[in-house]
Structure formats: C-alpha cells, structure tokens
Length: 432
Ligand code: URA
Image (tube, rainbow, N blue to C red):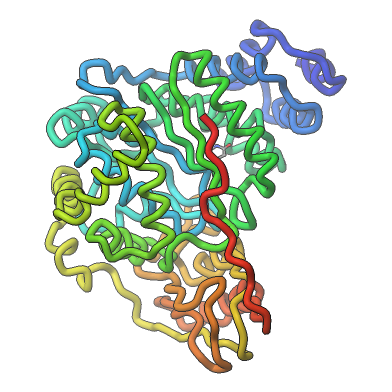
C-alpha cells in the first residue's frame, strides 16, 4: 500500500490490479483508514485520468450486490442530483415521469451537512417507509411504475466506507472521487440511462461551471464505457431552489408543484430534467414534445395522483397529502426581516442550508434527530425588492433558542443592495 500511495503521490497512473487491491483491501478491512486517507489525499492533489476513474467506478460498483431491473419492461431512467438546498426535485420528478410511463427505480440518500436528502423529506409523511427488500422494490415498480427507497447496506459498500472517510479527511470535492462515487451507485442500481442534475454555486460541491463541465464529461465517459446513456444538466445552486427549506415544508411545496402551483424555478427545473428523462426513456422523441406531455400530466392531476399512489404503496397516510396542514408543524415561527430598503442581490444557499440545520431541519452529526416540521420559507429571493422591516423569510422551529443561532446565518445569507441585480439563469448548460 505504501508503494501505491507513493505512486499516486508522484502523479503516476494506477493499473486495474493496483486499484482493485486498494479498494478490495479497504472494504475487507485489511488496509487501515490512515493509509486510505493518505491515498485519497494523493488522488485529491494528483487527480486520476478518465481510464483510472472508469476502472475505480467499476471496482466500486462490484464491491456489493448489483440490482437487475431487466424483468421490468421499458427503459429505466434514473436521476441524480449532486445535492443542494431546497432541492425537492425528486419528489416532483419521480411521480411526474412515472405518470408519463417511464419506470422510476429511485434509490435516494439522506441529508448531510447543509444539504437535505429525499429520504428524510419522504419520512415526514406519516407512516411512509423507505425501507424495502429488493423484491418489494421491484414489485412496487412493476405495479406502480415507481418506488423510492434508501440505499441498502449491500449496495456499493466501497462507496459507503470511502465517502465516510472522504467526509472527514477533506477529500470530498475531487472530480474523480465524486464521479466514481455517484456513478458506481447509479450503475449498481441497474438503470439503463441516467440524468444528472449537476449543481454549481455557493450551496454545491462544484463552485464553477468549468469544474462542473469536467465532472459531467467524466460521468458521461464512465456511462458510455458501461453502455449507459448519461445526460448532465448543469444548474445553479447559488440561491436555494424554490422557497421551502426543511423536510415537511419541502414536501408541501413539491405537492403544490405537482398540482401546477409550484415556484417558477422548481417547476422549470423539473420540466427540463423530466424532458430529458422522457426522451431517454423513449416516451418522447424531442424535449419540446416531452415538456408538453409533462405539462398535461400536471394539469390533468395525473402527476399528483401518481404521487399519492407512491405514498400509499409505501405505507404513507394519504390524508396528509390531501390536507397538508396535517404535516408535522412547529410550536414557534418567527419572521426574519430586512434591515434596509433595496433589492435582494444575493441569497447564499449554503448559509440558508446552515440556518435550517440550526432550526432542527438537518443533522449536525450523522446520528442527530431531525425535526420534520422545522425549516425556512423564503418570502423574497434574488431580484425582489424589499422595504426595511419587511419579512424576507419565516423561520420555523420547536425550540425558541434556535432562532438566534439561525439568524446569524440568515444575516450572512441575504445581501440587500440599491441596484437591481442581473437575473442569472437557472439552467446553465446541458452535456450529453
Ligand atoms: N454525491 C455522492 O453520492 N458522492 C459524492 O462524492 C458527492 C456527491
């Protein structure tokens, strides 16, 4: 292992056998964390070329069980977001695309740090379970065209162990490590085609479009080596997506979006990602045809009904979906007000994410309990005019002491200026 660490530290390419011995040795416990940490740091500084990254992905993918979806008819299309704040797209997209006839087999993750996770959001629905066996997962897709579940312990154990170590060794934001982490999981889940929502900005791992493009190309390359079509949509995560941040608050916003009353940015992103999924799923020939199909499914109520079907199939209480005031609430709410007149010129997604964690909506450690009702509803976003003392956002928490902690981040998040800022596009680039 010392020789392999030195080889990478000196900027040399590692062979398939060498990478296999590193990953297999780590998963089996033969190679200790401190040597893998040094190896990860060497990769962080010296990088990996596309061949090494594709080999690493393949080894990671094969470190656990592989899900075979071939008995489900149709092109199975998965979607992955690299993570953000207020990102509830899966809650809208999965039922929307399933309603259009594309089978959706979705394995999602939990929130960590300032970013939220689909599983936590779904669990804010009373009774709903995201734990299912592989057979139940496949049966649900066959019957309802949709299932959303958590990552099973046997799926890509190499990523589980590596990600936990990267998280505490400052080696998360490396393009080869991110590409292999995401793609190994997507490939192990058995999808035929994958749409990646690659976030860029304050609240994302990738801070520049240039880095995001490199990551996109790396993932597309890995996909094509494995005969999978991959489309990467680079989207802005400078400000939060939509207005709701926090688990139950985000599910309620997703429900409104499925009914056609969602915020403009969230709706636009779902139509963009969904249209790629329909084209890859061979339900539409062009993106514009796909957008028309998706809009009709929203207008007719079919997308919302598919969401209810998903909730019911996974044991959730559908009364809550019809009467959203039955969702978990908080004892206290407080308005966060503007300290001056002017335009909102910045709304830092990272700081909003951290404020929502302070309110109880996220985990400060992996074992923290989530307060499902807690979070933030933004009343003003970038480009909006605000008067002094007007409400910028409403904060929700079950502990009044949390408001002061969250307000420190709210003060950092909102910038008010006299000049109206230029509106930046949400969808920055598509690479396929
Ligand atoms: N999401 C993942 O699954 N892995 C990464 O490395 C980064 C984001």
